[in-house]
Amino acid sequence: METNSDTRSQNREILNKTIFSILFAISFAHLLNDLIQAIIPSVYPILKENYHLSFSQIGLITFAFQFSASILQPFVGYYTDKYPKPFSQVYGMLFSLSGIVCLSFASSFYWILFSVVLIGIGSSIFHPESARISNLASGGKRGLAQSIFQVGGNLGTALAPLLVAFIVVPNSQKYILFFVIAAFIALGIITKIAFWYRDHLILLNNKKGEFLNFHNLSKSKVKFAVAVLLILIFSKFFYSASLSTYYTFYVIDKFHLSIRQAQFHMFIYLIAYALGTILGGPLGDKFGRKYIIWFSVFGAAPFALLLPYATLFYTDVLMIVIGIIISSAFPAIIVYAQELLPKKLGMVSGLFYGFAFGMGALGSALLGILADHSSIGFVYKICSFLPLMGIICYFLPDLKKK
Image (cartoon, one colour):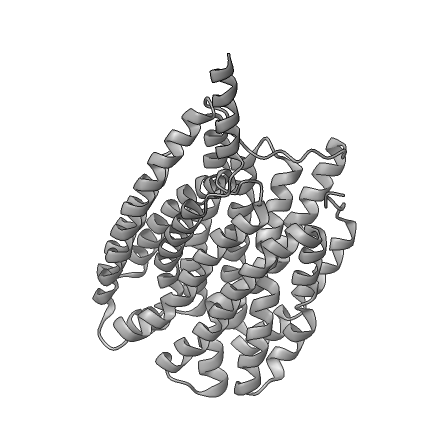
């Protein structure tokens, strides 16, 4: 009897411990996954030049990638809530690996579309289960765990244009094949994580093991809060689409830079975006996620409004500030949503990652059409008003524990 009690006590101690080795491992896997994803917008100037693509076609490429990455995520999350699949990430990475190989040899617009869809499918499988793993390894420090997980992805996104500038731009499109190395490293890491995840599920007696944080909100208030979060995701990622997809074209057009120079300016923004992610989760743990979300989305508004009128130097300064502020929202939004629906971790993570990718896809497609019919500078003037939608954070209930 005492042995059973001791075993339960040991198990509880293990489950309540923050496992940093797993958090950093899944963060590094996220870095490699998003590095592969971010190759797509990083090679846009090369693809546009090689295949004489319009901005509308560039937008459609982003739409194809992000739509395939978004549409499956809620379904993957819903399914794995009921039937956890520790090795599903391995299958996802194999899709991404195939997409990289196809993209390096793509010789037409439609072949490019097929390649990015493969990478999108890989991403849709990777994110819901990875978010669950970071939660399981958090030891209850969900904001911190989500920030560690997110910063890996953002660093991968930041490194992509830099590596493309050094590896692909001076050579040819076929040098994209170099990035299969990242996919093979990721396969090794997520395979080891999968064994830990499998053993952790056994330890939990096949229960989900989330750290529940119950609230007293009615179902209608929970649905309303989720709707507000989705509107914020729309604002954030529609605006982010203008930065991630078209920023290199913007600085090339406005400041007459080369492709390689533009990639370095993109890197500055993406590094700032990664740094902001580190802050969002822990600050949400400490002060309440509602206030971090409010500051992150609405707080970027004045700087976004100034951006279209800045010189190159101040463009970099503003992009650093915008990147740090606006990126701190997503870890807080994800954890806030998980706390609203704590028994549906995978579905919530898949829904919000999927909706984020979907808004990025829609934004990229529509902004590409707008750029073709006006100018890339006009697109940035219009998009600068989007962060003002962050004012609706006022209607979010405060879930901070007393």
